[in-house]
Image (cartoon, rainbow, N blue to C red; front, side):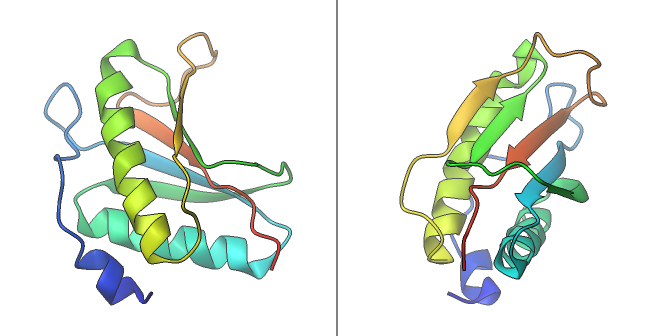
Length: 127
């Protein structure tokens, strides 16, 4: 489905951080196929249209079996779950997935990313 159609999806839950600011997203994709970058870019644009601050698209060598949202601050657990739901709808609209987005607790991780940040790791596409 085209980005315009994905952007027309109903807005669910705002992207506010606990302090009322915008959530900062870092989108990770496997760099083994152009389709992975293309999907990350389209979804990133749709998330920006919904008020998120997409800071960076980051190519990685790791292959992911499932799309995940990682949170590093316990106060962002709810925001990570809401983002996961929005990603499920966006990915389904793109024809890229029909499974649940996992939410991972990375509060143990050091060094921490910038405040109010979440990471998205897209499942690897092999096309």
